[in-house]
Image (cartoon, rainbow, N blue to C red; front, side, top):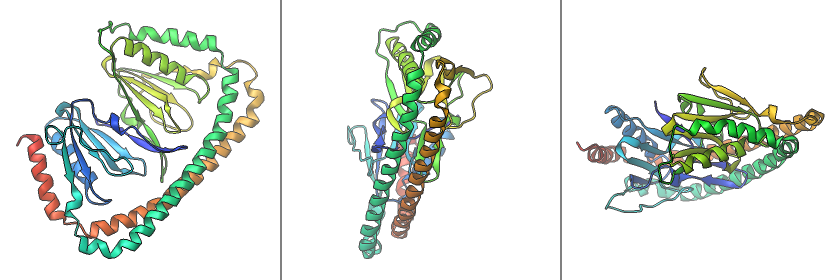
Length: 354
């Protein structure tokens, strides 16, 4: 089953990226350079299909500003990654030629077609910049309101019950004896705020033998629970995938321990998803002491204000998307797709060892 992630996203502090977590150390990486619309996503999907025909599943990394587009692709069985290395996630090969490849798709753009649009492209760039600035402002305001709820929940969180829940979960790791090696943590996102609203890829990530749903909201201790489980797993030498909150990128929201076929997933009102029937639920609402309901009016008001401000951020990102689509149209008109297709085919043949 293919797995889907967001490597970066729109946050209250601006664009945040975990792009350096797409590839594992030592994996061959193809760095794609070029303008919008020059075929980066198409090449990645073509590569995924080619390796898929050989029985190798892929990890897809989606763009938070256009979820239908790809910012990265990883083929674990081939130790291969392909990434969009253009702004706002500029990257360069760590070992050029020796291992990694720089593929400049901009070389297939006819400047005679694009250059007459120079002023329009500059104007569109300013439109996009203004939209991002406004969207991040709305999102920062939304998150500030949401933190009011977090503080209320934190006030009534029973730390003793939280500790008990952590201790009850730790035996899940006992099958893995300490290996003597350091476990590796891989941080990514399973959700993003996009021009189409809140989007999540959780449906592609919950296929595990053991699945636990953490029902609750920020401020109820879910992040502390996940951090303790993660730290214990890393001590045993187990690799972990920490899927962070798009609104607070340093905070884990979900945790996957692949070697144990084990996953912990937050179930909240912001990120609805379908979960396996065999999933077990841990209710973090039950960890709250008496008195929290006295704040129900404030909690509901804050939720409503968050939704309104986040909705305004989404609408502003949608305006940015319109400008972005026009930029793509200009560059697509200047692309020599026949020559690009030939070059992509030759590169794929080399990667597949044909």
